[in-house]
Amino acid sequence: MSKLFGFSIENNEPISPDVVSPVPPNNEDGVDYYLSSGFFGSYVDIEGIYKTEYELIRRYREMSLHPECDSAIEDVVNEAIVSDLNDSPVELDLDHLNASDGIKKKLRDEFKYIKDLLDFDKKAHEIYRNWYIDGRIYYHKMIDLKNPHEGIQELRYIDAIKMRYVRQQKKNDKDKYMVGMRNTNQNPMDYDWPEIEEYYIYNPKGPYPNSGSASQGGGIKIAKDAISYCTSGLVDRNKGNTLSYLHKAIKSLNQLRMIEDSLVIYRLSRAPERRIFYIDVGNLPKVKAEQYLRDVMSRYRNKLVYDANTGEVRDDKKYMAMLEDFWLPRREGGRGTEITTLPGGQNLGEITDIEYFKKKLFKSLNVPISRIEGDGGFNLGRSSEILRDELKFSKFVGRLRKRFSGLFNDMLRTQLLLKNIVTPEDWETMSEHIQYDFLYDNHFSELKETELFNERMASATAAEPYVGRYFSQDYVRRKLLRQTDEEIIEQDKIMKKEINDGTIVDPMAQPIDPQTGQPMPTQDLGAPITEPDLEKQGASTDATEIPDGGEI
Image 1 (cartoon, rainbow, N blue to C red):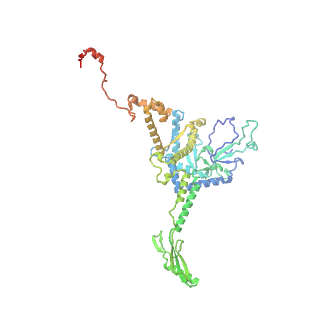
Image 2: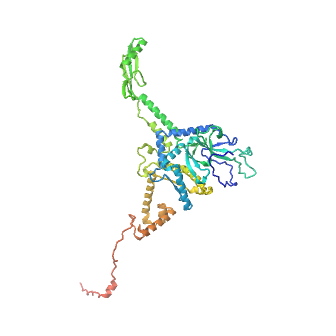
Image 3: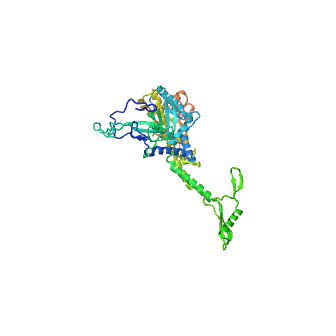
């Protein structure tokens, strides 16, 4: 067997033989699939896939140079990658990982090491922009083959137009005629699918390798584990090509450019006013009439031009442009010499069609139109005043971050396995709970969270007088304030600690003002006032005798 360039990390525990399916593995990630031919097979350019994808990447890069596309790309990248002077654009979030503090510390240290190899804190914007435009990104994980336990030594960027990910069917003469056929002696669901080899092809001399094997100059075969590969997640399911998020905007951008060019040509040709000179030539013969007309033209025509190179204004009569006046002869019997003015083009300020295609381009780039037009829309007011496009854009950026995190995940996996920090089996379990926390400064998201918090607090304040009568305190915290079980336990613990420390006053020790929700101040009202005991008072003193009354 010919050895691939690079290294491979083998999993010692293959899939159980009881796990069977008649459906072959489906990996829609823009990978070329080749049939076996010869020892390793030949790289056949089926339907010009190489050429097509190479041209697509070139097209994406050309599109990024247009002002409208560049503005949209920068808006997406700036939202996804937040550059801060103090904080890193991305950090490792291990709150949901069930592991010891020592393992978590090693994970954070190794992730910081990977970021240092990428120089991600400084080049994050460039790296993310290249991935977003090309729709894919490649990094070569360079290690010391004599001492692989030292981990990754360097991460080297590879141009996407020189790299290709390939799945190839290994040749097996024994099962030459039984490939894909069902083995009736075993499980009826079990199919003898051919063995697949996965690797990368790198061609340092130019774009994708041509037909022929790697030994014939078609490229260098690199092992799968030696390359970190991350795509946009968009795949043309008909052709199997990986697409960029700029793919939808190709047609819209071409239409906008053509409309703008046609508008410029129309304005240059129709904007100026031109005159028609009807020159009376009498009964002169044709030749002499034409000569007379040329003499009149040279006598009265005054063409002053501005030379931008020298800064001079000079008379240039030897050139006649398409925007100049018309000189027409008129025979005897006409109205004599006459000058008529042709009006310029009308409604030259109409750009409705350009505005339509510009909005269509912005929609295809998934960026809110209000961000680019700059005439209102997104502001720092209430979130209800902001277009719903901002919410869609925020979710779109979140999906991009999730997809881009696969690059970190692959590099971190390789680093941990090489340094024997975790096993491949442990990584499969741990990777599900490892998150990547990006810095976020989306103003709309902040406004939305603030408004939701204010509305919840207003609802809780309105329900306060009815706590104990219609609602329980637990109901208010769960339903109105939307606190989870973990948040309730955590907040109760923190509040108890702050009350014991004297940081806050125990709200149960003082009455609460229903209007403000604040504790009411306590005051000394003195001794309580009691009513006099009339029976006891009558026993101690003689009652006054009532005199007998007389007759009236």
